[in-house]
Length: 294
Length: 267
Image (cartoon, rainbow over all chains, first blue to last red; front, side, top):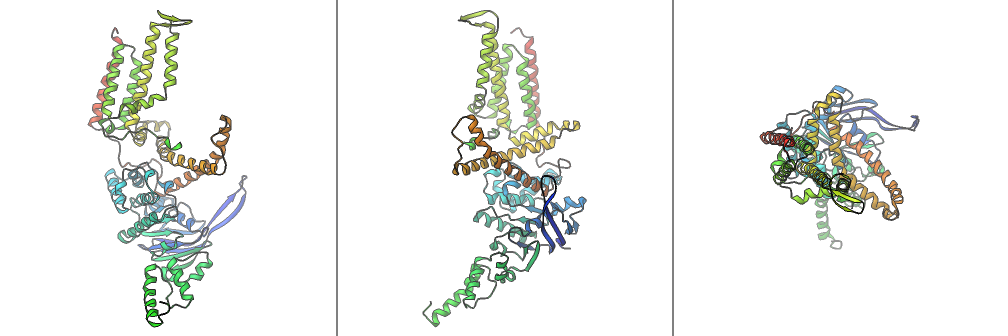
């Protein structure tokens, strides 16, 4: 069974004026088909308004598709009776860390989900311990969230989801409001959860550097999935991405430009290290051959 | 200036009082406040004084923190003392022009002052030794019976704790908006009361908009984490009475009875 299976999904936002007349209807999702395997790490890219956040909210029944179906582990998000089970198995982390922390103490916030599930106190304590350990925030357990940095708050929010023992975590631009070091911490945490715990990750972002770590990238544009493949495949298509007003990771872009200038570099270089691996031998060859450009 | 506001006035030390169940402290404080109004004998006040200062010692909160709370009632204190002193009829002690001070007036004023001060001290002990969260929890649990009368106790407690969480965030935001507007020439400092109040309008509008946006975000985040009201919800740390709570209840009740019976004494 697939973790997520969205088929022929349509979603529209209706804007009404004061008299409840329809002013504007905008289609956020148009016939979207997308499925995600269990245990995979999928990155969804797209510029603002491409429908990626809307898609995220469909994944745990916060919003319901106008047409089509969204199945989470085979459960239909439209079934009221399975809504809690869906939200339990598919947790969600949002963009603004401040607006998703409910309690005044870190451990109480992490406990919020398990408390809603009606678990026994000792089981809740165990899960809070575990979850904080997994995101590396155990030392901050008794602190007030207001004392934490953005990255730390976001890891607390992740712990809050982890404590519900989900099969899948959907992260909706979790790093958009963070500084570079906070961003790194969050990404590392998410990757570890995927590798060690086998939790399926759906990461929505517009930082290309973050997408490099995914097993699979889905590019969304105008409410549809327009590109789908491994990071290497996707980032080899630099010109296509540019047309969708998306950039590529810095290393990929540099390699692409160098290739255009005639250097024999392969497409789809993702990181600086990789680029160096190809560039250093080239420079050495040049050095011994011509001697002029070394 | 806005950052100076502290919410709740919890004083984080470890003391037997801090460890009591919030319900015990709520009930104890209520009984203590009641007891102050039950007696009008000197003995009563003496007992109340001894009780109060023992509890203060037990709480390990420095005395000057307690006194801080008194600042807020100085005006009220001065007013009630002078009314009682000057307006109580009785045996005249001395006269200053048209003002006369009586023995009875002096006594009532003194007792009134003591009562007020003890009221404030007594309730600050509770807020100083109980985190706002524990307090909300305690209120939710002890007012739980009101659910039967259709009072949404859980929802109110949840709102209180969310409000506590968001006060510092909104304060920070107000500060930010204020600075942004000052940078563009807004003036919050000068002018009379009306002008100042008017200057607040462009501050409040963006603040409200952002508060609503946060509320929407937060409610979504709560739903995403399976929140579905108080039904079927458990607690990580459910309130449980311990041995100390039973002892505290016994002490407070004995104190209360003693205070009530002081009225039978001649003085």
